[in-house]
Image (cartoon, rainbow, N blue to C red; front, side):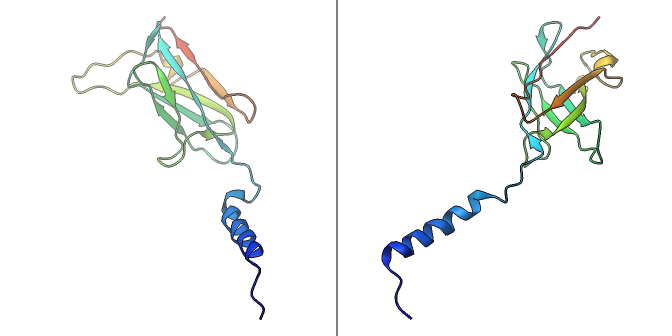
Length: 134
């Protein structure tokens, strides 16, 4: 067997290193989702934003916690940021704190939510919700 020319060997090694980066050509059905949530103009710090798919066999909810600025970023799993493509029911919930105080979020934004969002491949998938307590 003849030895391989040095430049051909380098090319082969380079191609082998790039192979894992090419993927299999399949686009992900999970896309990044961010936004801002306020109630009467104030951030709902510590509340949770839930995006639950409306259609399809997968009923996997993506969740995000609202920070001090009112911003959230959804996670489908602890390892995967984003939400599934498609239409989602959006629920904003606030868990009771240790001192038994909670902010009152109207039912039309949580357990009887009227909020929906469509996660698409086009656009930024940034959804802001300016809620009112009335």
